[in-house]
Amino acid sequence: MTTRVEIINDFLAINVKPGSTIQDVVEASGSALPFGCRDGECGTCVVEIEQGMEFISEINEKEIKVIKENCVGTATEKTRLSCQMKIVKPNGVVRIKY
Image 1 (cartoon, rainbow, N blue to C red):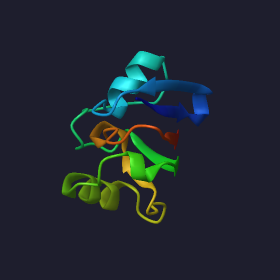
Image 2 (cartoon, helix red, strand yellow):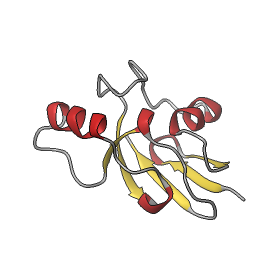
Image 3 (tube, rainbow, N blue to C red):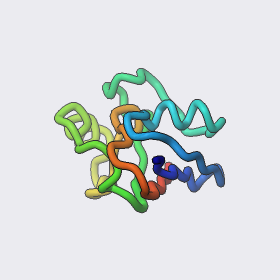
Image 4 (cartoon, one colour):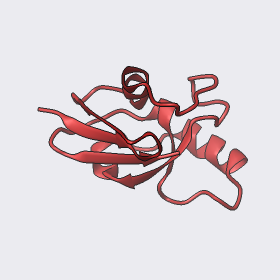
């Protein structure tokens, strides 16, 4: 059982099992989505979740802090740090835009 992760900017899609990180998906798919620190500190990997929030992990305190600092005036409830997200449920579609 997998969830389909689509990276809109790159016209890529990959089916992944729950527990996979979005960082894993990006590296496996060849996406150009940028990463910096890979630890949720820099904000380089900010994305918008266009679809499928229910299939990814809950936002954490580190993400909230970095998004508030780096996305002033542009953040929405769909703004996330891709290095902090995991797929948590199968049988869905997660669409990401960076």
